[in-house]
Length: 112
Image 1 (cartoon, rainbow, N blue to C red):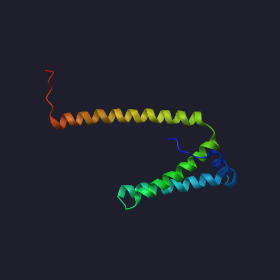
Image 2: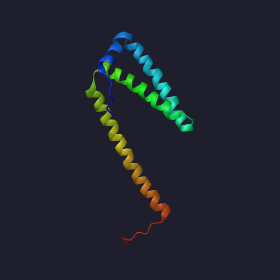
Image 3: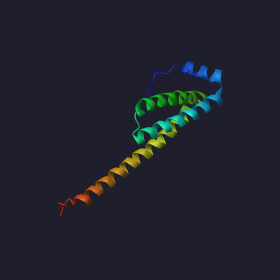
Image 4: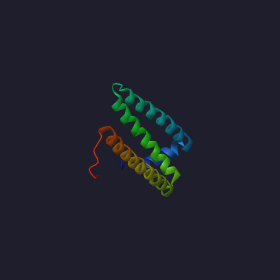
């Protein structure tokens, strides 16, 4: 997703607070995001607004790390490799779901 985030402001945050501090903040925000996801899984009231807020905080800090690393080519390669695995898992899931449906619904084989 492309969000409107001022890259110059993100760089300023890195410059002012330092890389180590921003990595520490990323750790904290990831932990808070985990808590928000758990609230959603438990069906807690008000989870949605908390989840949105923590996603926003985490994206801002991830963007700062991306600026610091300055290695979009390798990051894109990692994303591409992960997406291959996602597509493979989806295909496997689709095959398993189709096989389960056939077994559980006793679909006659009309090709005989």
